[in-house]
Length: 72
Image (tube, rainbow, N blue to C red):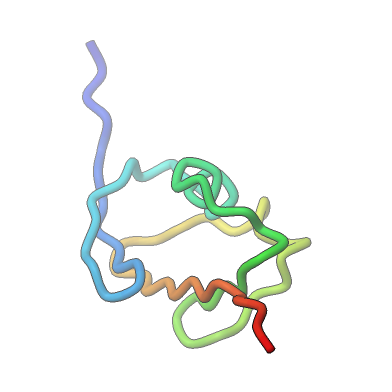
C-alpha cells in the first residue's frame, strides 16, 4: 500500500495538512466554497479564478479566502 505524502499549508490563519498532489481547484472544491462568491489570495497575491486549476500547492503556502457579503 502506497503512503500518501502530506504537506502543511495555512488557510485563513489555520494550519492544515493536505495531500502533496492537491491543486488549488481541488482544495477549494473540498472546502465547499462557491468560487463566484470569493476572492482567493495565494502567498499575498490575488489570483485569477480562471487559472486555479493549474496552480499546484506547495508546502507552507499561505491562502486567504475572502467571501463577498451583500448589504445595504
